[in-house]
Length: 306
Ligand code: SF4
Image 1 (cartoon, protein in one colour):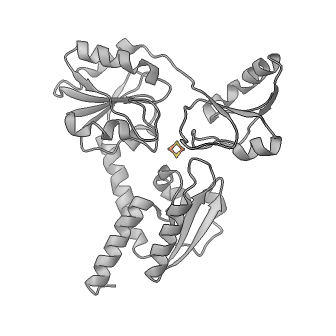
Image 2: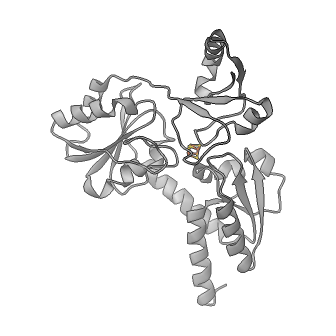
């Protein structure tokens, strides 16, 4: 069988070992060198050109719900943590009885044990389920639903994992505590969440002054949103703005810089691109932010201020 192996950046260092293992089983193997940010980002184009029989996608679980033109096998990369380490959280969450617990795909296989440990120590632990993330308690950078779905019934949120990319998807009114299983440090994330909210509001305020909009449409299979891009273009043009849809697999700030006429980008792809306004050098609004902007514009027009 001809197989295309695809790895997220952090696992590419292991690619050669996996390639050899598949070859030893008699397969013809190719490695995808494209950047891979999530299971939204399947290397379908490469597979098509290579006439691959299958993609083996490492490090993520299933994300795209519809049928795909080529079989995709997902190989989660599980990283065991020392669950007992979560005891470090207890002094931080003393005041909170009911907790929403969430983690990333690498650790989600241990979420039952994490829950058990916290419950043994007097907590009530709720585990919700997101829309895009496949497993209960699993969050993605674009899907904090595992927390949102139980938020109203909890006093606080606990996230287990490294880095800030995932917990910043958990925009919530409840206090958030992040436990890093590598350093065993516990950090409250309220300030970071507040800063992100402010940044997004600031982008909307800056976009209010813009007349020319580039609408970003990604051709990555799990990010492609033609209906959203067309809707955005229609809403902007009917209000007298100039707008064009800009499509690419990889919506790189460097490549977009030359579209100098655009004063603002409307993003229909990975929603976390809206956090990269510095790299784009202009405001970047997700569709929910565009809805807020349109309400402000319409309100100003009704009040005769625009
Ligand atoms: S859309 Fe963005 S946040 Fe969601 S899985 Fe893809 S890369 Fe991650």
